Length: 313
Image 1 (cartoon, rainbow, N blue to C red):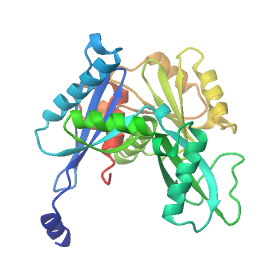
Image 2: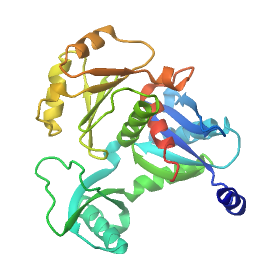
Image 3: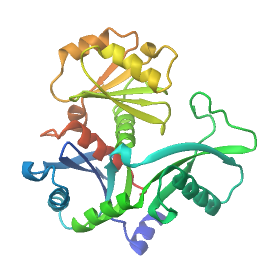
């Protein structure tokens, strides 16, 4: 009852819509929850016209128009956009800081660290931080010092945020959050695995393979320490091992389970190759699990899903 009164007094905030784009396809995802607690995934997507894909200003206008058109398919009620952007636009760094710093001190430290890594003045960066929970695997050579705590800093150039804010404004929607598309893919993958009752529970380090062209492998050493590699189907297992070594996973990577997200058409050669690994390959088909038809391109769909999960943005 208390929550009902709060909603009546304060109003229900506009719904979060997750967005992602990849290879000029834009996909928006929203999660509807019924009174029985069941979730319904709705998505809309479109592709930018061919004649504007490589032209800067025309591409920006076309992207805003496409985004606005997709939003309007769900009516004119206010919405907030949580957008997954290319991972190369956002930098993540883990550092040790003295324990007990206040929030303003941590914010200031985040900006200082960002400026040390980006050749721009402080007013031209956006930075944020996150406490790293104790017990999280930080990777090799990153043991925490006594009297310090570990935080992760995310930072990017302010013009990246300004451009996205302008894009959302032109599309008539409020920009609520941005994050790396690789983080959104990771979050969507874990959500699918958990919600749809897979018998095997994933643990870190985690291998997530997206059956696209080229194949995309995401290696997660923990929930935030993510790296991405594009792979070819030829010599796939060798590329797996090489990618794991580059990501700092040197302890029998072939024994790790891999979670494979595929489109409606199964590549039998890929399946046979993965079946020859020592570690198990768990197959998931997002189209079947989410009951989406027609199926959007896999990467923007899963990016949008991961961002749609940001209900508290």
